[in-house]
Each structure stands twice: as structure tokens, then as C-alpha cells.
Length: 213
Ligand SMILES: Nc1ncnc2c1ncn2[C@@H]1O[C@H](COP(=O)(O)OP(=O)(O)OP(=O)(O)O)[C@@H](O)[C@H]1O
Ligand SMILES: [Mg+2]
Image (cartoon, rainbow, N blue to C red; front, side, top):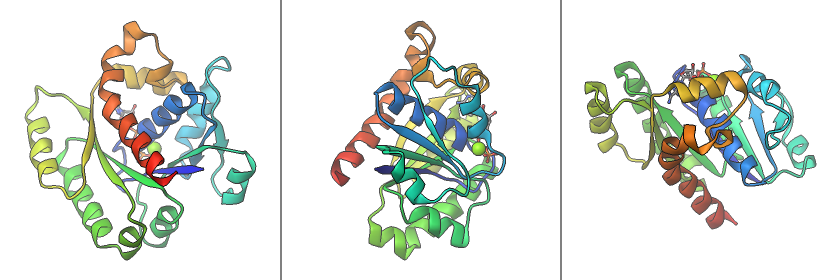
């Protein structure tokens, strides 16, 4: 089983959006996938409860379940949606079973400072270095026309970790959150532009899964 941890201690950075859409992509590829909802707000649990039965299935690992529960489901993938404020022992526990880590980041000065500190901590972490954990950043809610998008690009240019994708700010993600859908469940006419933006991200995941075997 491959475990993808989605983490950024900054609230509202896009963790659940990223986790649910990655799970939706994998489910659409007929992979056995679960979301491990570690957030007491249970946002991704709610999303799964709203998910139409006809869509490709995604299992739920409820907060507090043990890793062996995930194994007993015969899963190929586990996407961990972590809570805001993740740090210390909880962060270490979340990193240990992870095969890759994705850090969503929105173009706001507050988010960039908080994320800078988080990434600096990860870069210094002995566990991360020993594990050779692949870490990628995903720029979320990007509106290319704005000054803040330029500031985000400047910030990302100075990061130690690769920027895997830029996802645009769009009501498509808001609708997906409401409807238990991922962009991969939508018709081409509504989501083609977003599929295009996801391509480097899905490729990054596939590459690192293949490396780990
Ligand atoms: N690309 C996008 N375009 C428009 N809205 C977006 C986009 N990405 C995320 N959002 C919206 O931004 C809000 C915050 O996103 P999300 O809930 O995924 O963040 P989070 O990191 O999981 O938050 P929390 O820390 O509270 O768990 C949500 O309302 C979500 O629908
Ligand atoms: Mg969330």
C-alpha cells in the first residue's frame, strides 16, 4: 500500500481539496483507495458521505483507526487528510508510514510564512532525511492575473522542494466539495482545464509510487 500524506499546519490551505481529488483520481483509475481522515472537523468524511454511489468507490478510514485496519481493507492507496496545526509527535507519527508528502499552499502572505516554517522544519527533520521522503508542493487557488500569484511564484522559486502543480482558483472545486465529487468525476466539458493542471501532479505521484514499488 502506498500512503500519500497531505499536510500543511496552516488552516484552509487546501488539504481536503487535494486529498479528496487525489482519491477521486485513483478511484477513477480503478485503484482500491481510502481516505484516512485525521481531522476532527471530518471534512473528507462528510465529502465521502455525500459521494454518489455510482461514482468510483473510495473507502474511509476513520480518525483513530489503526494502520492494520487499513491493511485489512486490501487497499492499494491510502490518502491521509491531516488536520490544521499538525506538529510535534503527531506530525512525526503521520510522517512515519508516508511514502510521499504533498503540501498545498495558497497565495497569501500568512500562508507563505507559515508554510516556509513548516518546510524548513521538514528539511531539517532527521526522519524525513532518513526516509528520503519525496515532498512536493502544490500551489492552490492560483489566479494568474493577480499580484499574489506573482508573489507566490517568487516564494516557490526559493523553496527546497519541487512545485509539482499549480491549480487554479475556480468554483469547480467548490462544487466538487459540495457534491462528493472530484474533478475526475466531472464531464470533460466542465473539467478539461483542471485535468490538464493535474497532469504533472498525477505524474509525480505515479513516478514516486513506481520508485517505491
Ligand atoms: N482551487 C480552488 N478554487 C476554489 N476554491 C478552493 C480551491 N481549493 C480549495 N478551495 C476552497 O478553499 C477552502 C479551503 O480548502 P480546504 O478545506 O481543502 O482546506 P484545508 O487545508 O483542508 O482546511 P482545514 O485546515 O480547515 O482542514 C474550501 O472551501 C475549498 O472548497
Ligand atoms: Mg481539511
